[in-house]
Length: 402
Ligand SMILES: *Cc1c(COP(=O)(O)O)cnc(C)c1O
Image (cartoon, rainbow, N blue to C red):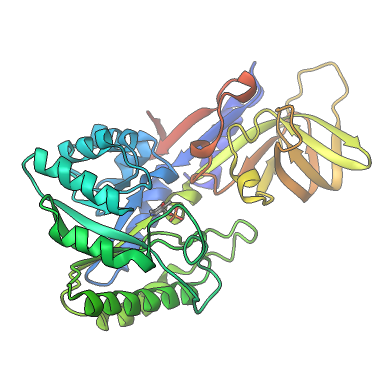
């Protein structure tokens, strides 16, 4: 779907009886992007898709043939993955797994578990033994700092994720001796929305040093190293995206320095794979000025698209002019203003964009928020205030699919 394709989908729907409010996903753009990404991965490196970024069935169906598999972090995600594809390899993570989810994961024949605590290792071992099998496990480690760069947002400080590096000996002991487990390696996912290929390579160099150190200290060998996701999307400057080719060139050199027994280096990216394929389009219902600030009020808001308030950013959008105006009332507009875009919820937190310069916006025009395909609908509190949900339109080959 080109910009023209998106424009057509929106203009076909604009001016109907109900105000326009939809997510549109361009599945051809998605598959093109992911194919280009995986083609640049050096040998031994594999790309999994972290489902939590967007687990809509058409997205999963489009991605399944292109990625090494899916990373699921709940029983619900396991079921969604299997509903789409009976054989796609699955990795099972998540910080608080239940016994039921662990049993389901075994039933769904997951490739590996990412274990987050010593107790969880016992739980997985017991479930695997009961099922008459052994489970391959990676230990998810929460690294202790200090780190060379200041970007490690989920490790090196207290979070609920992973096993504290300080008690790793206990976890390695459990993973290598419990009867239902096969210790397979380490999992390290330590940051989010990183925009710098160089910083990402620095982080992988740190991971290399850490894992080599643990192998030496504990007398173990890792076969698989999962380096997580965390490749970012630049919402503030859409031209300034993470340069994947620069990253993979550095990665190819770095991987040559990895020991041969690390047979597989897994990435599990969410945001960077799916963000760009999604747009959130909403009709302007009113414009007004309060205390000198020009506001644009839309049909929709952060109950559909919580990403901007969650990240405290102003989300980029364009104005799609809709000339049709059916009302007999005068049509309000704002010109050459720095506007704040808000939704229909009765809370001042429902802000999608702030201080955004527009040359003209009228009631009845449509605002198109780009890069809304990851952590958009998925993370939003859909039923707060009981407004209707947006439509979800998935487009491929110029046509809509379900
Ligand atoms: C969320 C998450 C990912 C994906 O992160 P992105 O920033 O979307 O790439 C990968 N692994 C784990 C363990 C996660 O929690």
